[in-house]
Length: 144
Image (tube, rainbow, N blue to C red):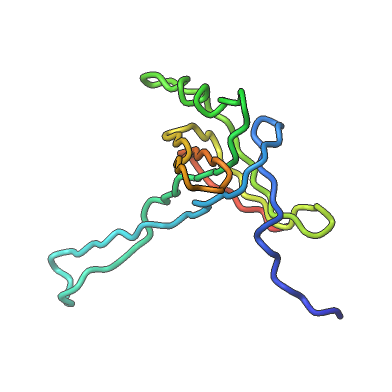
């Protein structure tokens, strides 16, 4: 059996609504279970017990190079109104050398909470990067 190596992080795709969008960086694929501490006054021990509580999901942060006449992030952010927003499902796939998904994260009902423009610098020699931060209602992991 050949040696198994970990998958590198640089080959991935991001899709929403069936449309593939190119990004240079994706962060925030985090979920956690918050612990609840409880103590009944009649417990003989002078400490609390811990039990699982609500699940918590971090915001997903996407970064990409700015392209002329492409302001989709700002348009999507402008759909946020009081109690209404355009929500999208987000699919992030880590790919192998054959461009096949190895792991896939699905963020459900995502919506933008922050759009950030590039850091402009007169002496800089980098690509202008914009950032969008998305809140969502759940992160599902599929390991292929």
